[in-house]
Image 1: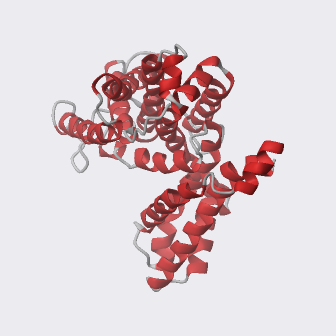
Image 2: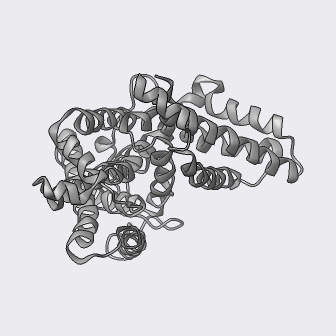
Length: 348
C-alpha cells in the first residue's frame, strides 16, 4: 500500500516542500522576511473566506488548462499548447456571444461554450494529427501555435472586432451583461469553478473506468504493442487531443463569459503555461488536478500581498512557479529508484 501511495503523493508533496524551501532562500536573499512572506501567502490564499473565493476563481481556468496537457500525456504526447487553446476558445466564444447578443442568455452561453470548445478542440487535435501523420514534434508545434493564436487575437482585437470605446485596452465588443456567467449563490465564485470540477471528474471517469481510457493508457505505454493489438492509435490520439483542447477552450469561454465580458489581451494570462505545472504535479491524473489547481490558484491570489507587505516584485510568484518546474524535472529521476517500495508494492 505504501509503495502505491509513494509515487503519486509523497514525491509531489516533497517537490512542493523543496520548492518552498528554495523560494524561502530566494526571498531571504532579496532582503525580505521569508517567514512573514509565507504567512502573507497563506493569508492571501486561504486565510479568510474572501481569500478562498479569490483562490477558487483563479483555480477554475487552471483545472481546465491542466487537462489540456494531462490528457495527451496519457497517450504519450507532450503538448504545451494550452495558452493558445485558451485564446482561440475565448476569441471564438466572444465572437459567438457578440453575434447572438439578443438571444436568450442560456442559448448564448451554450453556443459560446460549444463554439469555444469545438474551435480549441480542433486546434489541439491538429497538433496530434501532425505528429501521427507527418512526424512533426508535438511539443514544438504546440508551442509555436501559442504564438500564432495570440497573433490572430491581437489582429482581431486591434482591427475588425475592436470596440471603439475601449481606448486604454483594445477589446472586442461586449457580449452583454445578461449573457454573463453568474456567480454561485451569494459568493463571488463564478460557475466556471463548478464546470472545472465537473470536467476533471468526468474525464477521470473516462480515463480510468472506460475501455477508451484503458486503450489510451495502453497506447501511451507502448505504441507498438497497441498497434499490434489492433488499437486505432491515430484515432485515440486525435480524440484525446480533441478533448484536451475542448477543456482549454472552455477555460477561454469562462474567462470571457464570467470575468471580462469581452475578448482582449487578458486571455493571454499564462493560465495555459501554469496548467502545465499543475498537470505534471498531479501526474496527469484529472482528479488530482483539482487540489493542485487550487494550490496554484492560491499562489496567484496571494502574489499582490508579497508586493504590498514585503516590498517584493509582483513577479515573485512567477519565480516560485519556475522553481517548482525545475524541481519537478529533477524529481523525475526518483520514480522507479526505490526498490524496497517496489517490492512492497508487488507483495501488496
